Length: 252
Image 1 (cartoon, rainbow, N blue to C red):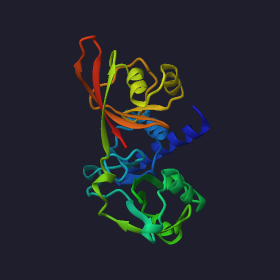
Image 2: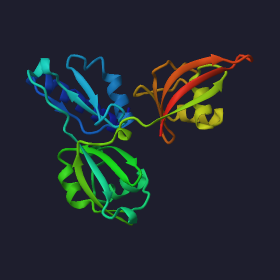
Image 3: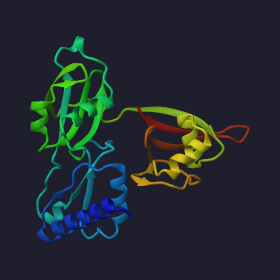
């Protein structure tokens, strides 16, 4: 365990203790998948205080932890998350920007990545989940992404495409082993997939998943760093040659 993870674990324990002892809600910033895995490894020891994970919608990859509940605190408190709409000042001059373009513009403003959640792109518009405290700074200072001049507004009316953007994929595999399914879905060799598992780049239900020969179960949410994420739906049928046809909903 490195020093950074040790400090993070200590921070989670402090938040849990303070929330429980003072009967108050406390929140982390947005957590990476690796940080979420650290939390899950501590979930049992922190179980004395209720914890909820949320990132703006139910499908967000980057989430905050909220320590506390209505039963513990005596009231309800929402996550300090806002959704910011980022769109071209003049639509016809707007570029088709990538996730990297938006993130690069935000980092160039000196913004801490932990204050930013998911960035979801719908055509020439992006929807960014961020902390309430960071929102005013971004509203004032995020005026350009690459060569496109943009305007930012806070919105609660984001389209359904920011919530669920799934594409059904069916592949033939010899079994429901995780490595075989990943290889087929992402068109990778078994050795490439093995490297992903060994590099701790595969997450199942928010936890690092290193067992490449493990079996996926219907409903498992799988995230593969650098490739994307999907919901595994299970096998639909078996071919005459004994192959399994399995389905997955890929986030696109």
